[in-house]
Length: 424
Ligand code: SAH
Ligand code: SF4
Image (cartoon, rainbow, N blue to C red; front, side, top):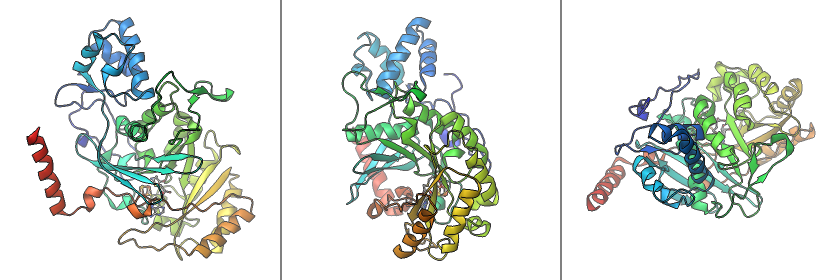
């Protein structure tokens, strides 16, 4: 196997502050087969060539398999009906179609669903699905844990375990489609979208539960840039998951040096976790601010490729009682947005509590007043309705359940798993 890597657990991890490109390739499996999920078409074609198909065959099979993997969501080579029957066992001997393992699925009383997932090397992470009247949003994780320790965020209290691979990132979207029963059955049922992005295709929203994706789960997506980009390319590919880039939003806590590349190489909507308008407060609650300050961050926003009045940048602002929620803060927020001439909207997020959190949520009246001040200045500032709080699925509440389980529970689960293996 070419450039095989020993164990993804040993993947170099980007440092506290500066992103480091993370090499990735295929993680070898115990049975020697190669997991195809997360690989682009070019890599599928290469692998089929290396396994003995001639160039023409490799290309044809690569295209067919790509379509079945990402557009149709099949998990067995036997289901790939336009591939010759004799060819399918050849594929199955050498390759597998993986998904992250589902450890637990929870339902909130408001319809929000949260899944605890596990990587092949036993790291747990979460994804959340938030249904609304007119859309269904999947909140996708980019890392197991996070290096950034924002003080109001539960994920920030975990150490970074590792970056998720492209397969584990796109695998979340695929699992959600599996769970919601949303793979297209017949012909390729996507429609070409507007003239300004001819290469893209888009599922029509009606009848579809999963219409939007936000990179707002565990982790800082711009510290796992290559893997997030490669995964989102598969999501946006018209012959892949075929979701328009306009329906995808990437949220960053402000990794300034990666923002231009994010616009150029990914091109999704951008959300920025601003949360404070003074150096003192932002330094405290988003420690990354000590490295990339508010001015630099707003300059990078002003230069974000693709931002326009039609495609605004979202500023996320968590409402923390007596910390960042005064009238003066609201006015300063307006001033900054105007100073940098940002095509912006503001998303006010009521703070979601978690055990031991050092902050409280602002009162509803305070949030309303803050929102009104921003609105009156002509900037949209809706208050985000907290979703899935009862199952710890709301913004900033994600923290891998395995870490929260007691030692005794973990031992019991391990014993059960062992017993199940022995029974097989
Ligand atoms: N790491 C990225 C994306 C994940 S967090 C980022 O920080 O932008 C998604 C959003 O939830 C961010 O705006 C984050 O600041 C916010 N958030 C984190 N903890 C929260 C909490 N306890 N209550 C409300 N929002 C929170
Ligand atoms: Fe990491 Fe985002 Fe949480 Fe900050 S808010 S600790 S960047 S996940």
